[in-house]
Picture 1 (cartoon, rainbow, N blue to C red):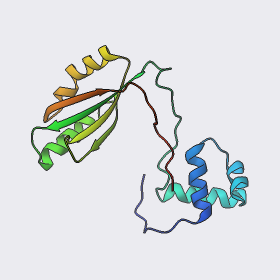
Picture 2: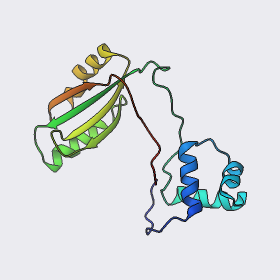
Picture 3: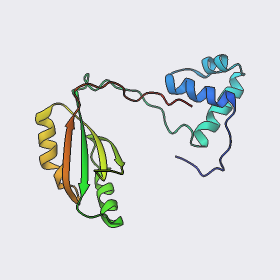
Picture 4: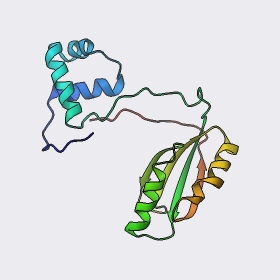
Length: 159
């Protein structure tokens, strides 16, 4: 969980640790220490501080969606019927309960929200759309885009 800490500049070692872990979260402390030229104790302390200060928010495996039967990626632009704090709050509270929705972002432009949804196929999305998506609070319009090819996804950030 992100803790309130005053902003501080990260040094070269901390930036290197973030970049290494972002590329391969399975690196051991010993491997990280060796690649950043610090002792294992120093490496562990610095890595823990990056967690404690919220620079690293979690570690998890990246699962191939096709291998688990979720090969279809769908982007959906949502327009709400009202632009009030209450309607945004109600929609956001409901969206967090939907496990098929990977990402939900409040955006500027033609939509209020942009969703990334994983389903098995078009029929599965049709069921989700009919039973859940259009029943979310305040949804006036849902514009759907089926992803034909994922060109770049979850790329490491460049900093």
